[in-house]
Image (cartoon, rainbow, N blue to C red; front, top):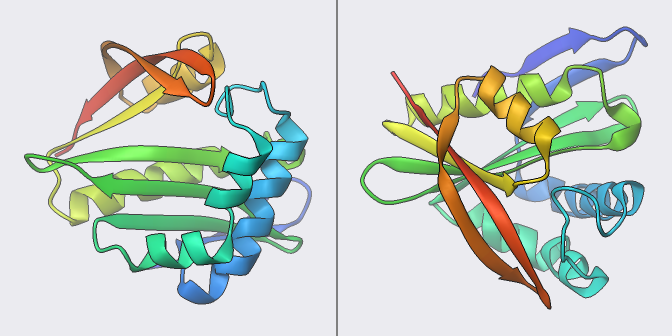
Length: 177
């Protein structure tokens, strides 16, 4: 996969590339930091307990996920380390799920999310997927707007149990060319 590099307004060089097994430890540290910066009730983390976040950010879990042929991860790296992350998962009938885009709040506004979604869409297209979906909390208007700006359209709602919470999710879908 080709790497994408750009200097941002604050002069940090940002590289977006496929995550490798050797990135697992730093990626785990990033995920815990993102959760702590955002706070446990923040959009994207609704209902997630510290234990659950610790599990998905563990080096063992991430190495297993990186080894899964149905999963692809991208990371955005700045001078300070990993500042963003995106994850794709193969679904049924040549569909992909964008199972997550996370950017540190401290790196928000630098265009990292936009670069991650563009790379994710290009990767899904290159892998032969015909469409891609994403889910986010119905109250997460910022994320819904972001996905709509990138060509996703509303495709329904679903309720999911996360820990002890019931979370209503907006499903958005995009047809890939």
